[in-house]
Image (cartoon, rainbow, N blue to C red; front, side, top):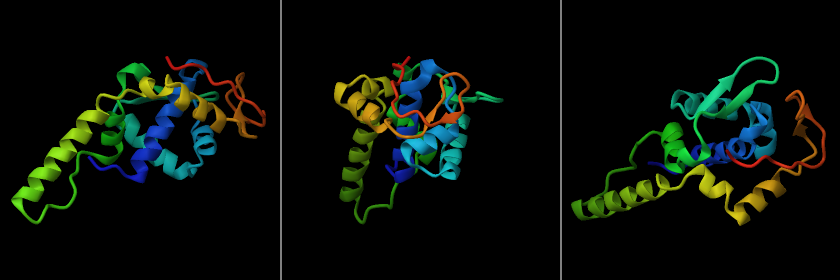
Length: 159
């Protein structure tokens, strides 16, 4: 599994959905604004997340994306795999080096597949950082789902 920028952005976007899952569908424009990722890149990421069955697209006014399963049931490893696949890096120059890197990659994969989105969202330091990040001048209206200009956000707990 590769740990790339796309994977990191995907995890941030999924944490955003986990924080707001009880509030209803989250528009991609909100994810783009709040995570400071271009809308076209967010769209590419969510296409892969949707195909992997990690998010559900809700069409129409007030639509957006929701987690397809509970935050407790989606692992960080699944998110990385959805956007990056299971590709391995360059082959090593010797059998010994390859054995070491194969074992290291296996350990990283196993670790990431044990961490759920809820594990992160429920950590006080992570939750505080996420809430501080969402104190932006642009925010989603709780009534209609449109982007609005509220100054303070109180994110919903993960479901």
